[in-house]
Image (cartoon, rainbow, N blue to C red; front, side, top):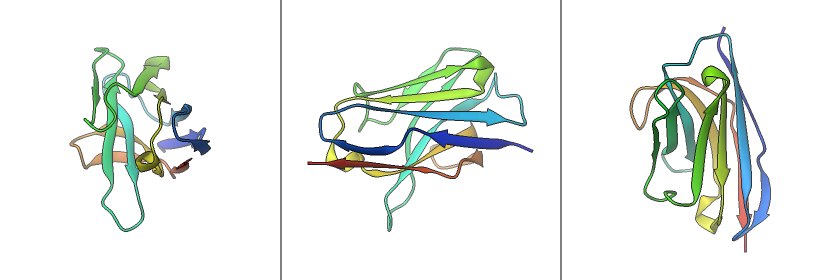
Length: 119
């Protein structure tokens, strides 16, 4: 059974950095797009970033481009999101996703980790 476990969320001040990590198990993800989405209560889940271990490709939402970096390691079983220059609007629950199909849909989801950016 596929399992995605996120870690690394927390409370930071605006301008600071934070890293999220996702450990995937129960499947083979080396050729799949893995990544992160985020959601604020009352709003739709939003695509953040994705990548594929086999090709080295990475993609980012415009809102985080230049500030966030995604890395896919361990043949796709580890997904890290390095977030720099955090803004108040980055506050959300961040979800790890495996086998991302579109900017809204993935086959598997983690339980989510809270990131709060304060002023």
